[in-house]
Every structure is written in structure tokens, then in C-alpha cells.
Length: 87
Image (cartoon, rainbow, N blue to C red):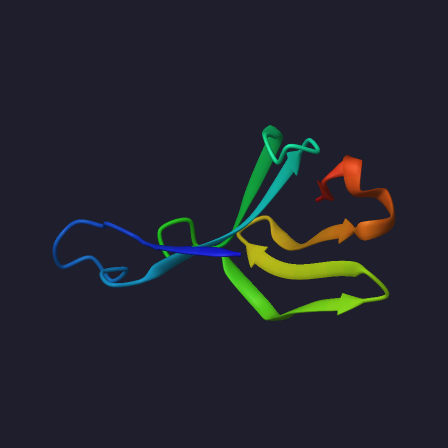
């Protein structure tokens, strides 16, 4: 997961908040990136909030988040690494 500072306008209620994203990178044997995908899971400006902590069970990562369209789960299964994560 990666966090960066959001940059809203002055006096915005989101001032000083962070964006949290999950970033998946597929690399070859020489560790050169061949594919990458990202998903914002927490952002005040996007009105998106992470629900709970990320969970890893039997090589499967699950991150839950909620936005205006409802609750979502982002999953990554180490058994199917080439597939990346699923929304």
C-alpha cells in the first residue's frame, strides 16, 4: 500500500489528509516492470474510506473500502499472481 498527501484547496475539510492506494506490479525475472495497476482505497477528496485493516489469509490479500456507490472488496490471490488484483 502507498500513502500520499492530498492537495485540496485552502480551507477545504480534506486539508492535510492522505490518499491510500494498493499498487500491483508484475515484473519479469530481471525485476523489470511489465504491468502495473493501482486502486485508491482511501481518499477524503474522493469520499472513499478503507474499512478495517487489510487481511492476508492463505496467501490471499483482501482490502475493503466504501464510497458513494457502496462497499467494495479488492482481492489479490498469490496462487494466481499473474491475474493481479480483482475488484
